[in-house]
Length: 295
Image (tube, rainbow, N blue to C red):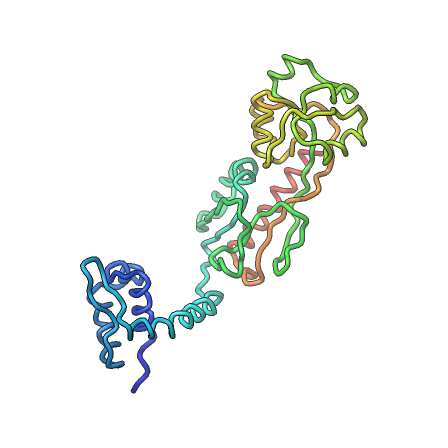
């Protein structure tokens, strides 16, 4: 018996998984007639009936189930193995990044890049999840805040981040402006220890025995400061749009360097991507301008 064609087995597996010819055909970009013809041809080659029709779809026969159990995992493995060799378009760039960094830093600057590269189509995947570049092969690069080393990825340092106390104008109007010595007497947002301890150790003053509130993520912490809940040891990258819009105010010139920095990361397969090369050059220039402005 001749080997059944791979596309017929792919159609069979898709139909078995979805239990519906129409949905399976749509997932494979085929007509229902074409998919039915493939499955019929496969049944004739094997001399076995693989599906029975039901009122709401199709169901595997016992022979169909045995075939599915034997071939489905192998087809998945072939598809996974071929993903890195898919066609790459240099005029399409997909980048993953944190939502907070997208809204506070990248998106306000992005129009200048798009204007300079009108031929480039950029896709931003805004997510708090760390992308697995081996699995998500459609993602070309990422913008990450971290220590600077991620196994299997090439990392380019963009700029450091800095921490400094910031507060809402309403809080300053209500309680006055603190000095380095009196800062601990004001309502502070955060948790005992951590970077607040570093701040008081370096710049003086006495840490409070109790902090007003703490939040799991930096963006919510900054928003609490906007609402006048207290003073936050803010990350300047996230805080600048709020400072520019006068919703938060810098209290001191002193700053602490953050533990992490901002990086552009990419897997080795993205080397030679023309769109990514243009994006990298633009990012480095934007990072230089931003760093100079913070000096």
